[in-house]
Image 1 (cartoon, helix red, strand yellow):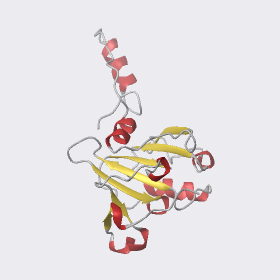
Image 2 (cartoon, helix red, strand yellow):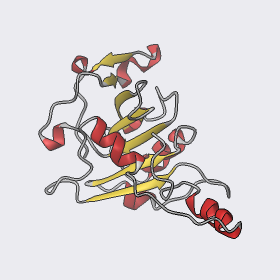
Image 3 (cartoon, one colour):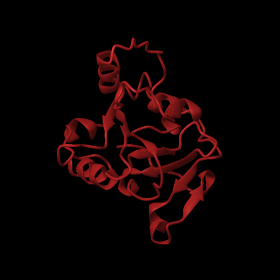
Length: 180
């Protein structure tokens, strides 16, 4: 999904340039990629009793190593989406684990979200950097079980025990742990 240009997009720069050229600009409200991807796979981004905070963070930085409030993101009950994080997934996993996040924290990766080529991969934080190939929104701290829902059949599950084979297993083949 292209998502909302106002969320880690270039809307401000593009609007400024177009307005500077004397062209009027109208913004048509849209939906963010994180919300579109979550809705596409039936993944709630908040839960009244378990996930009371949802953040959207960037996985890309133009000014050096990416530094965020890792201890805050690592807290139980914290959920967030990573935009542009395919190349920095390993960095995210390492920093979150160092900050105290449980290795079993659920991760859901949506590649090519809302498109006919959409692919969904469920994993654990300890295996976050594995199995990501294309443009993706990466959800950390969210899963269907916490919401009392079944994981959709189309979701592949990455089993860290079989990581050496690089094998992604079908959803019912492996049960993932819950966040600590």
